[in-house]
Image (cartoon, rainbow, N blue to C red; front, side, top):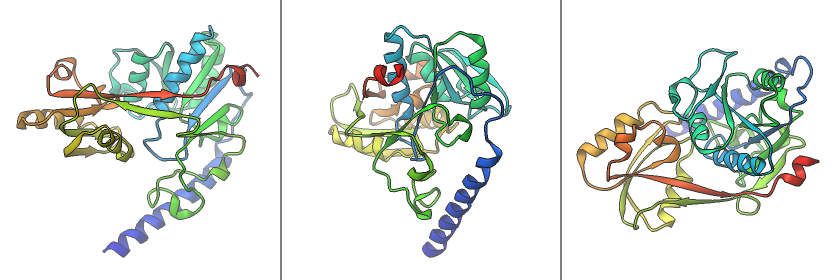
Length: 291
């Protein structure tokens, strides 16, 4: 059974790679590239790379320089392929994504949820509301090649079929992204998980593409994880799972900031519900952006 499972995942990775190579010629940008500057924050890692908190820090840097900043985030929950909509701090995450609502609440920018980054880039460029647009993800979109692109590098080895999802952790190879600026985590970008709680036994509930880093960060802070409820990325079951865990009693329950977006303020105020935050340190973009 283990051999069959490995073979299935490897075959799935082969299909993923074939799809990647075939889709690029069909998704070349049609029309003129917008004059609005675009910064794309991506990663070859399929999940848990930290793109969204890095976007927040970039927005803050650019805002501090006096620029009007917009952010576009892929609308995972939308089914309208050409739709883009503004996301407000109190918007329902089910109309766009939890990342979009989190950014609307936590950074000084206009946030758009979109199913087509290329179309949204064109539309926003015509509205003259922002001076620069930042895209949360989009590294694999061939229509965004004219953008200034940054990729978070966790040291992932992405050079062969077995490195690609579902066999591995990556969506593409580094060689696919000519001209991208690689920010090495631990050298150029630094993440620090914070939890306002004395180290003790805890339960963890999260829906991340790759929860391993989040779990190891908590353990490095001295917390002992005695229960893990790990759900799929963008899971709709976070609220239900949290209520079930609270009903059982026992240890404090720790959520990510992203998953906390799905929880009502009343439940978040429960004394046993804790939200871990993430601090990010990135290079100053001013000189690079102004060039």
